[in-house]
Image (cartoon, rainbow, N blue to C red; front, side, top):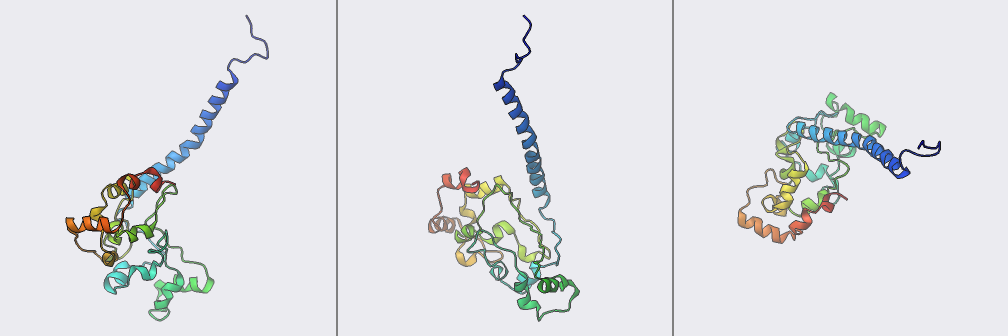
Length: 220
């Protein structure tokens, strides 16, 4: 029997389902592509120095001169982000030390214009990851555990992959990565015996393994 002009070949529900599937594919592909690019770049960045507006040397400032991490990264103990040093922090020394050096011209230009220096982040995480510096420091995770021997880096590079499985490895068994509070900012923090690790685990009042590995801990 021939169909009338108003009769539909597909039901409205099926048509809607097809449209939603096409829309999900259209929107989801760029997200999957971006995630793949981030995963690839995060591996490639390990050990590769990142070029900066000023070639800041942690080796010179930390390793040679003994400047504490907290002097420049002021929020590392109290805030979710460690914070990048502002121009005023750099000028506490360099308003007097090497003020005419060509390499420091971007610093003085920043002070003149009020435009922050465009430092390039070395340790980046995707937007769907929640990370809090202050919690890790408070629980005894030393800078060295994530940043490596940054006191020996003439230019800063990523020492660890910072990918999900790497983070979960620590969350599943945090004891070997814990240090006494007085050693958190030391480079390197020094060896910790198995007995000391267990004692630190109790002292730091860590969450249960189930809580530390729960999806909602890092994805909120």
